[in-house]
Length: 473
Image (cartoon, rainbow, N blue to C red):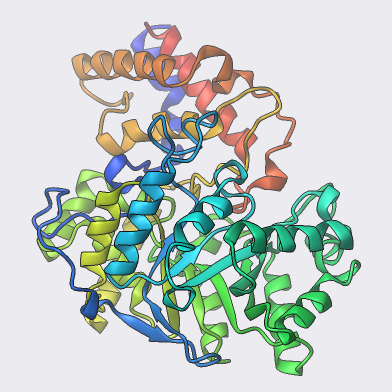
């Protein structure tokens, strides 16, 4: 296949190619760069200036920056996603928790399934070294597997959480990721199996009445009918939700639903909570890091608007501006992430009305890139056929973000240079037996993806593109 044939073969595919803006070390966790754009901390944050929000249901004064404990550092470097065989670096976690508390961060969010199941225990060890009244800890009933749907197993999961967290009560307990699908069941069947048929939701209410849970809520992904149903129950007095965790960022504000019909725009989710006075806890303010590392054209617009703010800082300002937001979670792996984010939130400079509208226009520019709504949560892993799904997306789209994707319409020498770099980097980043061409379309990953991405279709698209590149050499 010559270059002209390659252009003809791939033009349509490239035009529709999805973009995953994968973050580097400074943005994987969702950290904001310093005001000088260097990536270093230019000032120590003042803990007295950390922005706090009050939970109207409990009176809790919660730091607007919340510490997400899902990307904790491991001994061999990086996170458990990158080095799944390596254990949590407890000393590093302790140091980060100490710094967070000393600089005004008091909300820590974990789950039984984070960090290969090690997050709760690591979080508990770090927090237990501090007065219990100095922090709020949130965890989840993450009974995703049918093996955990029984009343006994779900209760055991909650009791283990208390034990691992070294506490006799949880400040914020969530029904984890309601609205999803599992074991061939639709969203309502899955929800009923996880929480209703086994009586676990009523049991959790009992635990709240006993003081073992101070605030009861849920995190939402997937079918909006489940979200609406739970809020209807709230209106009817059947169940009271003290808070709800939603995905909110300036891209998802208006484009989550347009890009993927199985997602729900953050504007709808937020306003439904706001009119009921239910505090919102925000996850994915940077959309898995994608909003922290933008293509040059988007970054340039941000610099022209205000040089003081990095792409991450702009995104954090957007997520923290709505008054109904209680805390904005950031999964932080390195101390510099934490330090930079503390500066950003101490205090957080809320967006003006003009800046808010400008960011929504910016979201349209990003939408035109047709971004995959992947947050690198790793729930799709492990793939039964060995594919490294996040790494495939990461390499493919990092080249787009860096402006080095082999373009069928580009200059000949640049095309050859970028083609070589793409293929070499692909083989180096993703072992050949774990690349997209090994996807058989089994769809095992689909039921686990909170963003409802058609992963097999994306694998097929990438495989066609790589195949065309190899044949054009």
